[in-house]
Length: 104
Image 1 (cartoon, rainbow, N blue to C red):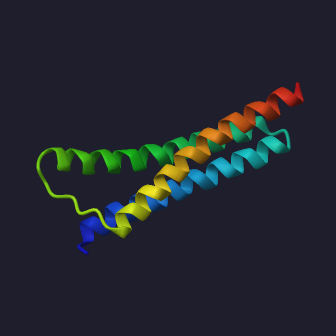
Image 2: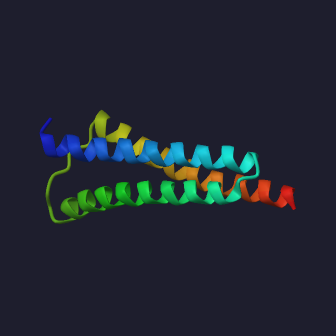
């Protein structure tokens, strides 16, 4: 595997994982009533997801221009991390809203 490909894969894995971690921390903060902290963590998750999305968009643009993008287990694993980060972030926002409503 070449270095450029490894950078793409690791960028997706790291940023997807960071987004999930920030979203989880946001839930933990909301659970204690720290809704400002929870929003800050969601913003951090969004930044990580934007970075990952930019990496993915670059890869898709290259594919659309005719460049062969190899899809293997590493790429699938990277995409899985990204999708988990997105899903976890979306669910965290909903859980935080429930905690806020419960807090009145």
